[in-house]
Image (cartoon, rainbow, N blue to C red; front, top):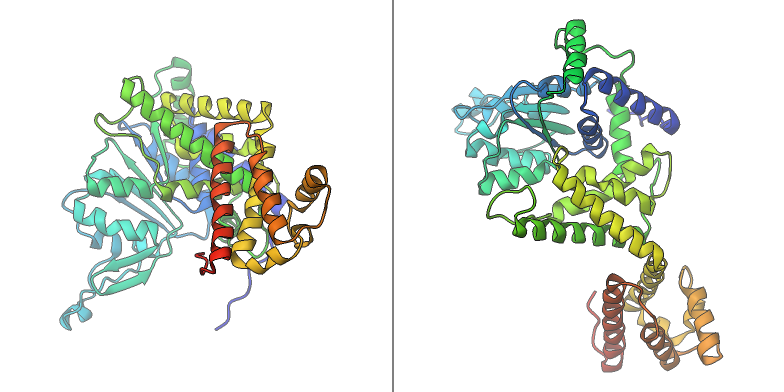
Length: 439
């Protein structure tokens, strides 16, 4: 049986529908706009979210109201406990298979076959169950004994009253890309608005005037994760590099504050951003650009990554992020470092081509096709050597002098130049020695 291709997206309409959905949820959930925005980011990028709070602040209502904005998705809900076995999440054992000595779960109606999931009090689950959830949440695959089965999961939201730190739970926390802490509202005016909503809806999720097809969300997620044939959102190399610099500086800043005892954190533990989480930033950057109707990510979008790298509700973290982005944005903007990054990364693209095809050194570098830095090198050659076309030794001299005389505006740009100088030296060393280059 063949399946029909999904209808092309009306991008502008989808953006409006998503904005309307966010506005509707915010109208139902008082003073939760930052958390709602974060969870919609999780939905757009196909990731999971963790909400930590005291009891009775409306975590279940928030989750169900958000999921109700979409139709055509299966929904699994469970409250965790230490007595539960994995079959609570993965389905009961298939009796006929068990008679044959095989442990196979019947996944019908389970989390495995649900697009949306809500796990309340997730850290009440035992470690055996949490370990089994790891692959399901990250790889979207049920792996239990001999059973391997693809999962339909798009987004799981988990809630907890406390954090239980262990080797297993730390790995589980990393699967919840987006995290928040929700505090009870004590302001009389906010309590009055919450009371109005309760009297109107009885603490139950409201039926929205319009729902978004889950298949539409799936297509948007494909765009945000770079796997769509319909639309591509470009992330320029200088944005990638700059974003990583911001994240590194934020991580250093948080650890400095933790060491000084001036910031929120787990005693005795450093602040760590895993490579798994760091690469998720690119999906969020595409999601931000998508929601603004753009086909390319901008430098300003990097500031919005606090949704991913800070715990929403922890002001210390948000302030640290703002400090990191503000300092680097000012530094890079005032010193033209951002343009320097772009130039050096174009130079890196040239080195990458030369590593793959050293024979290109036999021709003038300015004649290589699809080379963004070609114009820059041509101008440099004319100004410095009085020539536009250069050959192997001249190529070496041109590139070496170009990097040697390049004046970095920041330490980050200086570090990048040093790495490129090393790479350039390796290319000519390998060529002169006849070694096989390593790619």
